[in-house]
Amino acid sequence: MKRIVIFASGSGSNAENLIRFFQNRDDATVVQVLTNNPHAKVLDRCKNLKTSALSFNRTAFTATNDVLNLLKATKPDLIVLAGFLWKFPQHILNEFPNKVVNIHPALLPKYGGKGMYGMHVHEAVVANKETETGITIHYVNENYDEGAIIFQAKCNVEALDTAEDVVAKIHTLEMEHFPKVVERLLNE
Image (cartoon, rainbow, N blue to C red; front, side, top):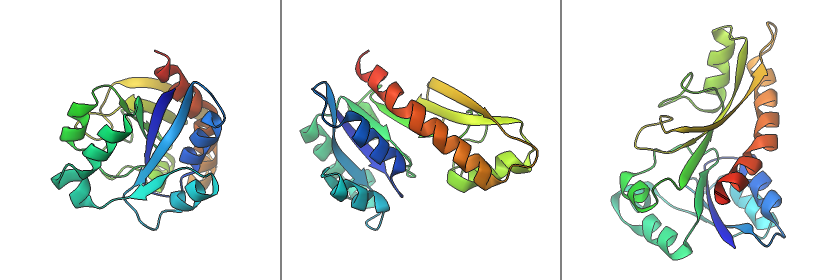
């Protein structure tokens, strides 16, 4: 049984989608959800889905080995960042090489980097009159959104689309593709 650990910071719609996708399967499951936000809605989603979830602070994540030791004890086959906003520390990446992946709501390398998340990305896409955008699933390295690209899916941006319209299109792509790409990575 392959083991997935998810990191999330917010509402957790992608985390819930992954949990549901891998529920009741004998080949893989989400064993833990970790969040840096003790008030994140993802914690409520996990409670409703009967999935273990914990919150942690910056010290536990970056200055000590608390989160690293938890991960070592959990023995994940894949660590999935699903709307997780903190830069991943090098000491954890070193322990799990090529086992940490992220989903980004744009076609990297465009609209990536520090501060480019959520509505910031979609507002920039609309402001720059882009004709397409999409999602990127990539490996995590020491820099924001610079790891090797695993998968991209595109959608059109119409001239009259608002940032909220773009959010809806991106959400559809995430729901469709993210679980399938995670499943493929677990089987490689």
